Amino acid sequence: MEKKIKSLSVVIPCYNEQDVLEHSMKELIPLLEKWEGKIISEYQIVFTNNGSLDNTLNEMLKIKEKFKKVKILDLRNNYGYQCSITAGLYNADHELIVSIDSDLQDDPTKIEEMINLHYKGYDLVLGIRDNRKSDRYFKRIFSEFFYNLMSFLGTQTIRNHGDFRLMTKELVEDLKHYPEQNRFLRGLILKLDNKWASVYYPRRKRKYGATKFKPVNLVSLALDGITSFSIKPIRLILIIGIIMFLISIGLIMYIVFITLISGDTVKGWASTLLIILFFGGIQNIILGVMGEYVAKTYIESKNRPLYRIRKIY
Image (tube, rainbow, N blue to C red; front, side):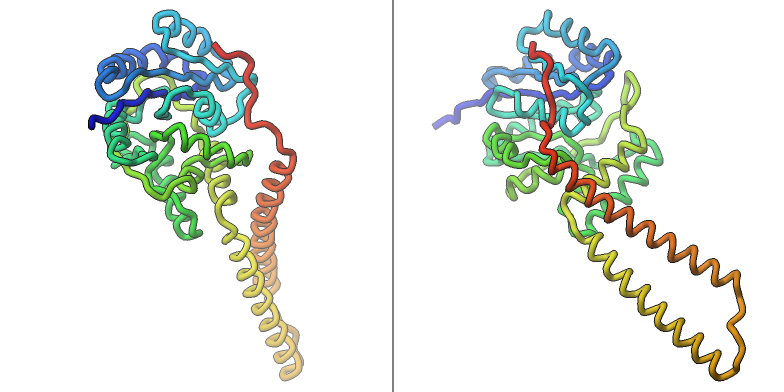
């Protein structure tokens, strides 16, 4: 018996992407129209305008005038990249939902492979970059460090997987049971299903506009990923504290021994000052890590909404 083909929503989060949308749609919409009636029954594009300060919303409305299968979520503020994706996922109407960046650096032709893998039994299909040559040097180094650190801390992540993925509507409904504010979707989705497939592609260079991800955004995303899924940093702090305590006890015993045997005081104020500065730095790092966890708890306790929608077009 032939399987019934399903409908598809493509979620595209946007922040100040007025230079990109028209060009991206010229590539994406012909693909969707080609697949319609063959591997999907119908399609929908869901734009999330994440508090853009430029002409992004008007560009979306122009696209909607030409193509009726477009839904626009105009958010009241910038709620962050992860929450803008979440808004799109929660408001998508069709059976299969793909999230992809507006610049289409993630290859949209791979959506066809994702859909076919779903028909083979997968409710979750991840897009994974097989190289990061298009990224800047800093971003490549930081990403490699981040994935190694996440692995060391025992947090499950898929190396070089961003937010290009296919999920079923049922899986998105399950995601709604994870209401945390500090969202790290590439970690959360692995909690939803341990059976997933993957497609590989080279990440393309951005042709239009400028990337909105700054180094501070990458650091913030990394901290959210680490503190949302692992308490190992707290345990490492305990180990460091024990080591520091044992070292200090050893130094105290050494100083007492030298003083009693020779009667001389220990010289070397410079080295003493360096030790004080060193351990003071470690203490500040410890306080910073603990502060991250306390701050996350404080934010979650407020139970504020993930996003607010001004208008749906």
